[in-house]
Image (cartoon, rainbow, N blue to C red):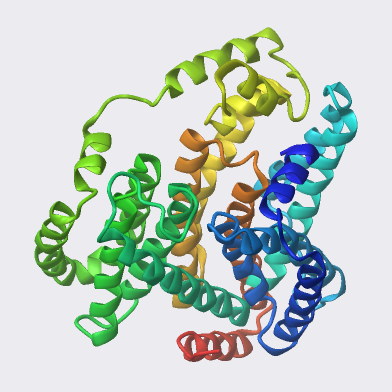
Length: 447
């Protein structure tokens, strides 16, 4: 996103706002972040990455403006945590190294853009996000406390936002907005919310009260998500649930089938009775692509015009608006337009590999808590891959924030797993066993 677009969006959101009041709120928010970092740990700050993305889509101009400013403060805080925290060492996987190509290529290719200064600013912003979220998050998620605070905070937020949105189903005709200014807002919350509550429910004892509540709430959020008519997110969330089941189904197959037999008819009955169901049904049964096939064809023609190095950083947004009236709705075609087809292919393979890597990581992790978190990262990255494939989310700052966070979760788990293996290889068996036991005992304790 170019700086002009950021400034214009900020100006529109802040129209008529009280700037002294907003500056005061920003200062209070900064103090609150410092307090939270001291009291609960940096896992809370990582959860805010998804929270701020959702707030940018709310119908409140003040909340959107604060979220737009707050993400920069958040990332700077995470960068400081990376530089000054000594709790865990960094380790760079091949995936992390390839991911680093994104800001590097954006910066190098900014000289070929129509407005090099704006393009360079965009590349610097993505570099800041990479350092703060991926590398800083790796240190945070290499610790059980950071992971637990992160998941608890994100579940609480998505639960609250979903409860606020659900009543709008009663009077919704077509793509309902409610709390959000567009259906996309709840897609961000609903997809992650469904995954989180389903994942957490599958960790509970079969037929416990918490298990039943999590399954029911997960189904309710998914119904709300379905009513937005967002096919990409609904299908992505469905595959994410299958990824969670791939690990849990063996031990809970009877329980899950029983829950499915009970919940699916109830869920279908609820969906059919809602006012907006006919609109959602029409979208899901239609083969129409909402003009995206035309956008893809135009993007491919632009990419073939300069196949090796593209048109320069930020060019896909401008070309998309000029030629099709909007962006191209595919991150990899947009990368091909901006940086060339080889770079786009490398990125496609990377973001396809990341969920698969999470499945392999589940087998290598030494504790149940770590395996479960690897399972969660896989599910979230499947959703993000679908969003990037059909939504073009990875070239926008609001889309890259939750994606980088999920990648950081995998990197943190990988680092901690390597540390445990180093204890084993050094012969510290007793220390390692006590360390793993302490992790297992604290995995389900509230932070």
